[in-house]
Amino acid sequence: MAYTESVPLGVRVAGDIEHRPDRPSPYRARVRWFDPATKRRRSLSEGKDTHDQAEEWISGILKAAEAGIAPNVATMSLAEYGTATMDLALRGLELKTRDPYLAGWRRRVVPALGHFPVRLITNGAVDRTVHGWIADEQSRSTVKNSLAVLVRVMEQAVRDGLITVNPARVTGWQREYKQAEDELDNPRALALPDWPTLLRLARALVERSHGHYQGWGEVVVFAAATAARIGEVSGVRVCDIDTTNWIWTVRRQTTPAPGGLVDKNTKGKRARHIPIVEEIRPLVAAGPDPDARLFTGPRGGPISTAVLRDATHWDEVVTSLGLEHLRRHDLRHTGLTWFADAGVPAHVLRKIAGHGSLLTTQRYLHPDMSQITGAGTALTAHLNPVRAPLSLAVQPAPGRRR
Image (cartoon, rainbow, N blue to C red; front, side, top):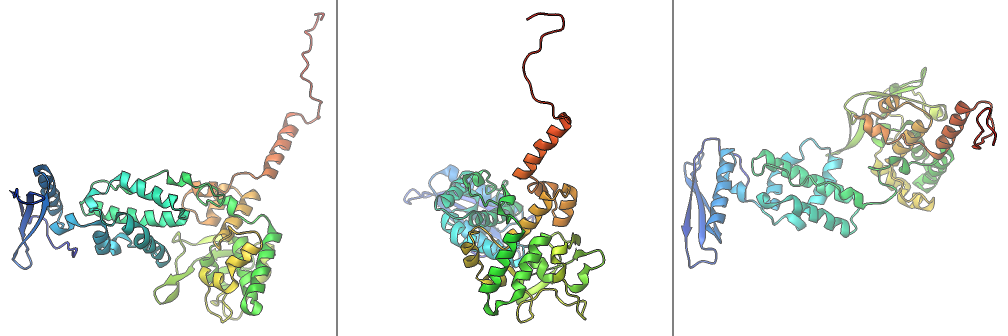
């Protein structure tokens, strides 16, 4: 069925019910209207088992028509409606987000719920579907992407007036996952433990790459030490770094788009400032062209997380180092964790990270064991500077014999 929104507000849609006792579904519900473009009468009908069901069907179509929606849309299955409205539902998303969403739609949403009419999808049906994906041992990101695209399509149905509440907004499914690498619950668990481990990773990636290209290791070290996204590291220009105060002004990111990699604004749509620590200052080589990229691939082109993965055989390398959970984005988690452990205040860390909410930043502020031990030492020093020995024996009151 073709989705149109050409039925304007005010077009009259008439409905009637015909009882045909010789049919398996004896109540034929029918709606008719005049197409304002062609001036021709159009109709839509469907057999129902009871008179009440027929009335409910007609009522739903009349409500859709009152909202300016074509009557045929009111009867669409989820698969048909998604095909017709996907561009609207996913508007504003980047290509790298659209692709996994569309894969989740094709591989999981449509097989599970695609045959349901949009108006008949309930919160319970979505909840059971999501838990079915989990039972099939789908990864967290797979479930998240599949549910996210369903939420967007059903939100479009709310805007179209087909439904009043989005039934895809289910909660609680994340609790079924107990993996330590859960980014939503504990992003600190994704971080590399220390600087030597980072250097070991960088060297291993260089050794595994074709031609032992040093640039791959430099990108990895720079990303971790600045808590930046790979796309932001790819987009940095020589002129973006103040080598007097050693501050990087993050102005852009390089991301996939139709036709290749392009530069665009940062994720938060605003510039932010990141300190360049002494350990990575040798990587900032000022050349004659201030607009030159600081980091490029072996042929001089821009890099992406996918290029880094493939060129260095990332998955094989991290597995060999015992870091199976590590993704390229976890270099950013590493940097944020190290900044937090160094005592950087939450409001400053938020500025460095570019987080929209302080709640996101606070996930990195859980103290590690050394900080907990240090807190105990500090409290001891505060309570008893003279280190008097502990005694809980009850002392007799003055003037009383025991």
